[in-house]
Length: 214
Length: 214
DNA sequence: CGGCAATTTGAACATTTTCAATACGGGTGG
DNA sequence: CCACCCGTATTGAAAATGTTCAAATTGCCG
Image (tube, rainbow over the protein chains, first blue to last red):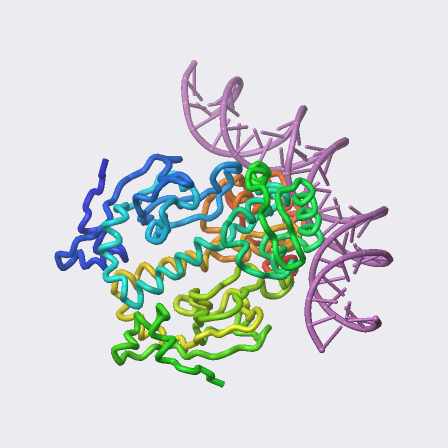
């Protein structure tokens, strides 16, 4: 499986390898491996297990799970993939290899240990950043489904309801115009899925909402 | 300006304060400050200067600069704002305070020093993550402008052209269907803004492209 | 109890998606 | 070296969805 021609050589150049002090006998928590095109690293919702680093070759796509198979982002050489493993129990999106690529991967625990004490400033900040990323609603474009579906999905994200944002703001977050949001909420209310007052939205029928989000 | 009632007290609870070891005489690089609703922290394109941390109160919005004033994301208590300052020369979006909030802010350099040696694992990873975030194309929804404008904007992002992705993938990244991308590229080609072969796109007339993106 | 601003609703309009058909380009095997 | 094939990209026309603009409503606050 592991096909690294000369680990030490390449690791001496890699930022991760350097941070791990490979040149001075340190051990890098990640192991190189060549992947087949289209290989799947992980799937949305799956319990976290590994973290990857793109070493060489084609970029890598993290796609929206479930419905659409449109990529959300590309990760080229030098980027991490699946780092959310450090702050979440399950992966948030799916990741596939694009083209022929070499990634270095390591178990969640190894990487965790390698990063050092949780109290370190850099580490604390890193975790906050990862958490923020994880919490960001996936901003939808039309191609991600209708406005109705996008709103339903967003409402199902637990945190969403805690924020008390104006309709204007919510609409902006969801990538639609306030009028559209208003109409969508009206429809969801008509279905009995939610109850919405001017400044709060309550989920009445979670099932119905999930049905809509699907 | 600085209105912190009892810095030590609150900082002892704050994750940043703890990481800074405030309780043991450490100095936190961030200073609390109450902000007026709608206050602007920074504007897209502005040279970076500060980093903020949301301490209490309403969330905070990072909006798309320029055209639309729709929020891209919300940052509640415990999140950082403007961290991109660590890896970029200019801010990538604009940030405004939503409601009445208390943020702790610090100069780029102070935060930089506080984070420790660049070689530290956690720090190295943090930077990679920030870079990746910064590089991610802002996935546009229809409300962000027409497909034409979104594509033009994306093309102007230098990195975009380096990736050699299929049209399918690109369309996905931009939140549109491949047919739409195809049509848009055809229009841009007609205007003489770009030259596109099946597997590569070249900017011919940058001016024209910028005009379109605007 | 007004008055104001945010939200909702309505109808026309614009854009994007869809579905289906066609053209293109690269690679393969003769 | 060329013809052929297959998958990707392009184009066309109709349908669906979202936006726009304007008007009416609602709820909140003093």
